[in-house]
Amino acid sequence: MATAMTETLSAAEPVDLLSKFDPIIHTRETLLAAGVEDPFNLVMEEVLSPTRAICNGRDTILLGTYNYMGMTFDPDVIAAGKQAMEDFGAGTTGSRVLNGTFRDHRDVEAALREFYDMDNAMVFSTGYQANLGIISTLAGKGDYIILDIDSHASIWDGCAMGNAEVVPFKHNDVEALEKRLKRIPEGAGKLVVLEGVYSMMGDVAPLKEMVRVCKENGAMVLVDEAHSMGFIGEHGRGVAEEQGVLDDVDFIIGTFSKSVGTVGGFCVSNHPKFEVLRLVCRPYVFTAALPPSVMASSATSIRKLMHGGNKRAHLWENSRTLHGGLKALGFKLGTETPQSAIIAVIMPDLEKGAMMWEALLKEGLYVNLARPPATPAGMTLLRCSLCAEHTADQVQTILGMFERAGKAIGII
Ligand code: PMP
Image (cartoon, rainbow, N blue to C red):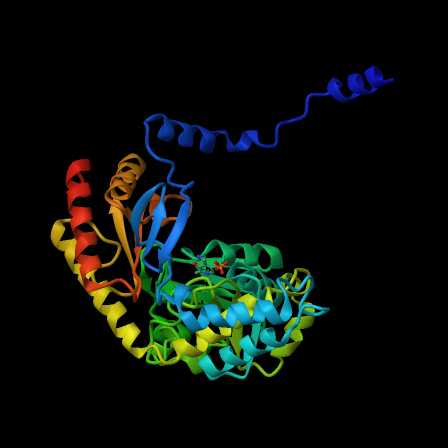
């Protein structure tokens, strides 16, 4: 009997569904065969502070964690999480719309409303899910999404999930956006999706002009402020605040995984019908709510960020020093001037990029190696994200490491 079964199963050779990834497997194997440490398999064995960890056995400065405001080790943030874990247990075991809304889920949404001075806030399990959920729920079949070609993967995935017509335009190009908007049939639903800071190159969107063009053409606007919350703008509300257009933006998307220092995603809005989204947004309804400890830590962190003016000033100082220093050393950077806490160092190719990444790691510095398809124009980048907790001395040490590694690899 067993033989008959085995014969039936082995009769037809299945098409290997993983074979489409052979080119990626090959690129990776070639890279590792050259003896390079695997840039996508780093282990943080011990985390000493927001700016230092033991990685692969080495004491390492962290310059690629998006931990912009250094809140991961804030004593109040940790204490709030510990207390909520004691009081409410380890997890929610349920969706927000069933048994998964605890005191601290409500509180973190209140903290977001205070932070942005907006009427509504909705928390998701990640920023990825916030984009997936909000974009796919707002714009469905027959609607149009007009988005920057360099948008984050979660934005593209949200577009795909909602079945709207997707119309990309050239990165940060106001005229291209306006042209696309004017071509959309009259009466159709239009959602323009923008980001405050684009995370690959660290450049900022011209939101003032873009939001004006959107309003003139009857489009709703969503801005993902993942990389600007907590840092950019007088109150740290992001690029829309900095450029004076926050009141004209219909939906702000954000994440807790960067300046807030925890995990989670959110959408805030003044739209009077916003609350209905809790009932119809599938990535909100059909997944478990975040643990109460994460919510309590996040609420504490967000409220502390409201008073983060000094930290913001120091982070700008760090960004200016690193940008100016790398430029003076002869590195090619993603932006002419420092525009955010991200500084992208452009590598000649993937091989040199991986060698430089490894040389920096051996010096004791962790940065992100980014390559296509995540990067624009097929570029290989070493992305540096600064933290308000990096000291001025650490920034000088980082510059020394870049100089030695860059000369050893022959990039400068
Ligand atoms: N939007 C942007 C612009 C991002 O860069 C990211 C994450 N890198 C996300 C959304 C997703 O955030 P999360 O890590 O919370 O899923």
